[in-house]
Structure formats: C-alpha cells, structure tokens
Amino acid sequence: MKKILTVVLALIMVLSLAAASAEGLIYIITPSASNPFFKTEQVVGEAKAKELGYEVKCMSHDDDAAKQLEMFEAAINDKASAIICDNAGADASIEAVKKADEAGIPVFLIDREINETGLAKAQIVADNAQGAAAIAEKWVEAMDYEGKYAELLGLESDTNCHVRSDNYHAVIDEYPDLVMVSQQSANWDQTQGYEKTEAILQEFGDELKGIICGNDTMACGAAQACIDAGRTDIKIIGLDGSDEAAAYIKSGNMVGTALQQIARITEMAVEQADAFLKDGTLPESEKQLVPCMAITAENVDNLSGFVYTE
Image 1 (spheres, rainbow, N blue to C red):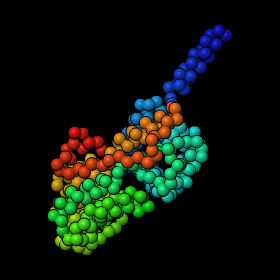
Image 2 (spheres, rainbow, N blue to C red; image 1 turned 30 degrees about the vertical axis):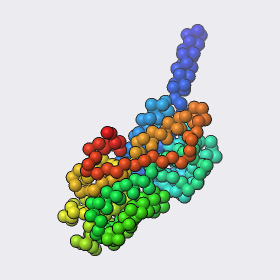
Image 3 (cartoon, rainbow, N blue to C red; image 1 turned 60 degrees about the vertical axis):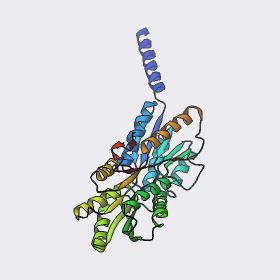
C-alpha cells in the first residue's frame, strides 16, 4: 500500500507540475496560411505564445465569416484563454468576437479592424493610410508623374482595402496627368492578380504604364503577368513587405512595397493577451497603429521575413 501511495503521490505531483507549466490555451485564427503574410502571423504568434508558456492552436478561416464563427465556437468549447485573430471582415466578424467576449474569452485583433469597439481587448493594425501614401509617393516618382495605370483592389469587405486605395489616391490624384483606366478587385489573391493583369494588358496594351495593388500577393501576380507578357516596363507597387515582393523589387519588376510590421504586431497581441490573462492589464488604447515603411530598391536588402533590420 505504501508503494502504491508513493506512486499515486508522484503521479499527482507530475500532473500538477504539468498543469502549472502551461498558462492556458491560445487560439490563433487567420486567413489562409498559404499566404506568407498570414503564415507569418501563425508562426510568430505560436512561437511567442509558447515562449510565454501557452499551448497554441492555429487555424485558418480563409476569409469565410461562417467558418471563422465555427472556429470561435470551437475556442469557446475548448475554454481557450484568449484568441488572436486576423478577421474575415469588418462587419461580418463582429458576431464571432461578441460571442467570445460574452463567453469571457478575450480577443486581440491583428492586421484588420472590426467596425465596433468595446468587444475586442485590442485592435492592432499597421498604419495602412500612412503606408499607402508613402509607397504611392515612390510610385508617382517612378511614373514620372504621368501615364495611364490600373488598380487591383483587395477584398472589398475588408476595411484595409478601402483605406489603402483611398490613400493611394490621396497622393496620385494630385497629379492630373496620371489617369486610372481600370479598377478591379483581385480579392488579395495572386492568381486573380495575374489573371486580371493579363486581361488589363490585353485591353490597354502599350497605353498602360503602371499598376497599383492593394497588397503584395496581387502585386506579385501582376508583376509575373507583366514579365510573361514582355512588359517589364510596367511600374508596380504593393503593400505588405513580403519576401516575394522583395525579390521582384530586386529584379526591377516592382517599384516597391510598404512593409507592414506584422511580425511585431503579432508579438504585441500575444504579449498584451499574456498581460491581460496574468493580471488584468489592458493596453492603453484598444485601437493601436504601427507605422509602415516604404521599401524600394534602395533599402530592400534590409527586409526579410516581414522584418526590417537597419
């Protein structure tokens, strides 16, 4: 009996230590991880959460609000400690965040905001307005302040789509000799960016001089379509700061991009979640803006993995 009691006590101690070593479970929910931007959110978020002692579940909602809601419900059923989420739509995601809040699970949003405050503990996003304006200035210079151009928009239900487009135009529309001849959504997608660019090139031919894109994924699709069509003269910009865009910038097939510091943004969300879970500390502000950086051939060598190093 003494031996059995000793074994049982030892087992209880092991289980207690195991329970004490884990701070809880954090869900990280993002759009498709096939996009390197969103993959970075999962990789960086998981690494930081594990470093702080949490278990992690990473999931992708593929910009489907219904699928996202199912994932939030799974997190609630799992009694998750917190949810880090790059959401599936500014309006469409409110229901999911509200459900988590009502269940007592704090939500920390990254990259994209929702159109309601007071539900998420934090909404941490890149300063898309500042970033779009900064890279638009570089593009205008590359265009020599004149010429016909096209625009590829992102997912139109996403606030970032409109913020980026509006701030591209806040700069570009100051120059009357820059004329937009086509504006289409490619839904943040590289294949759609390629196909839409193919069609635009066929329609406008040599008249087209530039393409502005709402993100790097579409910009890379556009750049490759231009290369395949023998139009390496087209001036293209994106916004994200991906390694793939950096490669096109280095080869001269893109003018530039604006780096969203998504690795830092994701780490901030996990750190803020940890602070809230440990002692109830909330960030000073729910909505937080992290500056973007204009990346061109002049400084692209300093960019890697969505991180800029001096």
